[in-house]
Image (tube, rainbow, N blue to C red; front, side, top):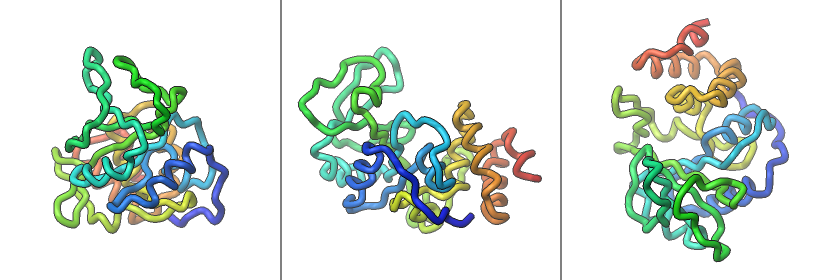
Length: 211
């Protein structure tokens, strides 16, 4: 898949996060719906937040780099309260919601909405040596240097086949839509890798990837 030749206009909050992360001293990448649209070269749907991928063992560097942000650990259990992140290591599927620190109180309970300024969503991933561990069971890995490229947003961005592998996990409506839009742009090598990766767990997308 080749990169679109021109960048598209993105909201201020997206540009701010990309600019903020550009100085991060460790590896990071843009993920989620904005990554999909950056490969397509256009905004195809509404986006609630901006997904940023970092490795779990770079947690200290992230905590220091985003010291001017509120970073809240949103619990997996709805009865637990939101907690400001103290910099400790988190593991997938744990993630952080973030917003610029302007003195607001963090809601004790409930979702942290973009309308409240929580535009950043940090997803933690694992690595082993030079490999990105995309899944532990079944084990799916890929050399880190093959997982990202610079996109039209001027940011390291998860490559299309890896994006669609992650989106195959939940199969939410927006994930299905992203697949329909992005899959036709995969080249033969990308399509073959994605087909092999999701075949390990069995998936309804396999039939479409075999065409």
